[in-house]
Length: 320
Ligand code: COA
Image (cartoon, rainbow, N blue to C red; front, side):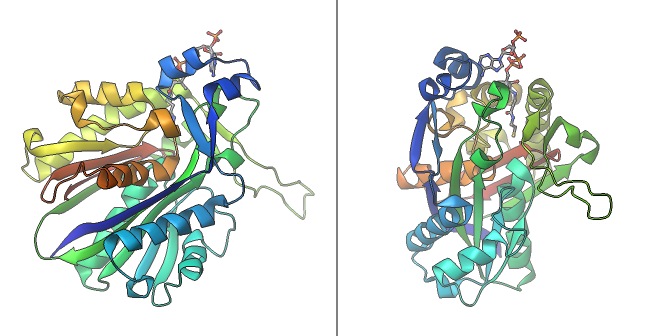
């Protein structure tokens, strides 16, 4: 038994905001943003919010897989920007798409969330507990970005991506996950908690706060390490990998990972120029674009790799 992706879908935020648009509200320029990050524009949501983007991506993934939502056994949503503490985004999606037979819960691992959720799904399939699972990555970072902080506001976008996975006989799927909580302060977003009734302390609303250079150094070291470890553990060679689909945080991070892995940059598809960093959604949005553009052939070996807040990291090697 192995885990195969049988359908994909995505739903970016509905409004395009260009670098020039941002230069109207903070002191920045298209030249600075594009040369440092590769980003030219991002999509922000004007009303759909996290759960409805997630549900739309989910519907498209089910259609693409040729399944009815009633066939889903489980919905996992990787998100750091849910609308509620409860119900979870996954439960909101379950109601919206009519997946009446599915259990549902969220996974919180920031930009690594989709990879963690995919590996979690594979464990449920491997155990035999479930047969068909919907894995979603959804984030609405625009609501936790400080739009007066040029160091962070230029980097992020909103969107959702989804995959339907199913237990099948052929192919391979292997995952690896890691975390280093001691380095959490490098990339944080305080949640709405923090208030205390007895001390009178008022709750704070958090914004994303980041030591950009530390995150950059972490990503360019950890991602190649993690991919090499995964390939070595499975006795697989880099030449067998057709694509490395990395979390889209920064074009320079992806170029540096390619160099460290000694792999051609053509094996690293990118769409960061159009979407910015959509956190948990970036890998499934890119996967969906590639799938719909016919860039993935059945039997291809691909590697997905994510990294981000926690700090967390993870990679998956799978047969398309
Ligand atoms: N526009 C113009 N200037 C900006 C700017 C912006 N949007 N943001 C920062 N600057 C300025 C800084 O104020 C600083 O000016 P100073 O030298 O006068 O102090 C200068 O540009 C350099 O800032 P620095 O933070 O050193 O830039 P950098 O080359 O490290 O690039 C990032 C910043 C954020 C693009 C880069 O560190 C990065 O991509 N890190 C990884 C972040 C990431 O991917 N996070 C998500 C992980 S999931």
